[in-house]
Image 1 (cartoon, rainbow over the protein chains, first blue to last red):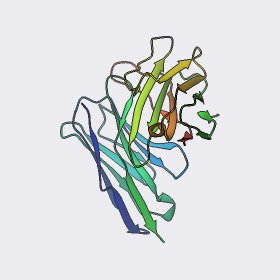
Image 2: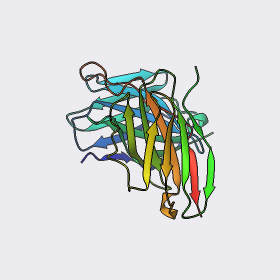
Image 3: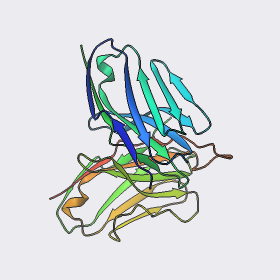
Image 4: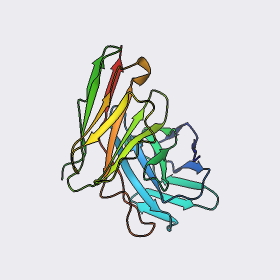
Length: 111
Length: 119
């Protein structure tokens, strides 16, 4: 059974700092991996999707990497801003079609 | 274009009552997913629809939960005889289709969710 773990559970950093969020999964037979952000009281916003054949994806200040063989992904956020404060969720898609989520990393960026 | 919409945004119900939650996917998206997020927990998959195929119900927690989808549009999630442990945010997502060519897959887009509170 696929399990997704995110470390750390919470992170507080000063504005401007570069940071890395970690995601690990137990079954390397994934179709894709998606990173989301969730703001309080709101739905999920997709940030990056990495297909199983890809190693990384970039969007603006965000870079996500995928290492299927080791069951790991990282989300790198450059030059963090207070507006980046949110919960970041990692999810993997298996053969069934649904996403399996980690519990998230709650990020707080202090001005 | 319009994103995934869900209604109601909030629902408070008494234990034992039935509730219906609605999801309108992005137009043209053939795959539709329901998830729930209980307080302090990660998102749990409930059910998904792909076109006219039989839905994958493997995540439904009990027979009190059911879902329907009309063609490739609106879906309703019904919870019968609600219990307090059903209190959660119910999220709907859609994607162009569940599976592309080979191992290619499509992004899932999420609605804002329905917060269900069972008293």
